[in-house]
Amino acid sequence: MPSRFPLALRLLHWTMAALVLAMLFIGVGMVSTAGPAYPALLALHRPIGIAILALACIRLAIRLTTKAPPLPADLPRMQVLAAKGSHVLLYLALLGMPLIGWAMLSAGGYPVRIAPGLVLPPIIPQDGLAFGLLRQAHGAIAFLFFALILGHLTVALVHGFVRRDGVLAAMGFGGRTETEAPEEPEPEPEPEPEPDAEPAPTADP
View 1: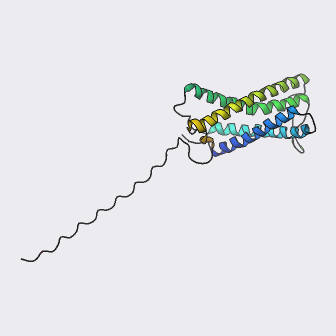
View 2 (view 1 turned 30 degrees about the vertical axis):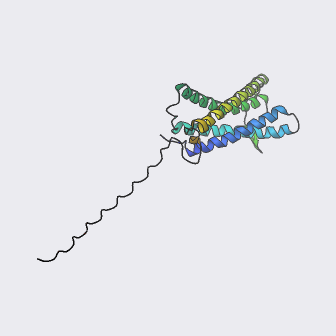
View 3 (view 1 turned 180 degrees about the vertical axis):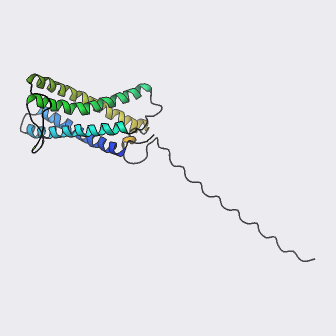
């Protein structure tokens, strides 16, 4: 079994982590202001959300077709189940949040502009009631997603700095994971035995 996730998966993980962190700050800014900064934040929010959706699809495809490092053997069964369940919830949030936002804008009749001259088509018909429901769902899931991220970060730090069991290092880039066995040094060649000394000459009788 591999001791690390594939390189592509690790690159996607940290890229998406940066994008999600940026989205959290942008979302807080959008909720707390209605001033001139709001349109600029909204212009960032939409394309980053679509980028997260696209990267999440790629990441899920790679994850389903590659092997993951095993969890530590001494991890209790309940923690193993919690780890697997939290990862399922993370993928659902990474895919669901952008899709709900896209559907919300479609229901409200707002264009999903991700770049100059590039507007995504609506994915549901325009409907005021659906817009309100999706907006509430988008906000509620955002708070749950934030709590899920905090839990994920806490557990990762515990594995990395308390247990030191290689779980955090499996998503890293440098050094050796704790589960990797150190390479055994090659045995040094044994010195060849020295030839026996020649016997001293004896006098002729």
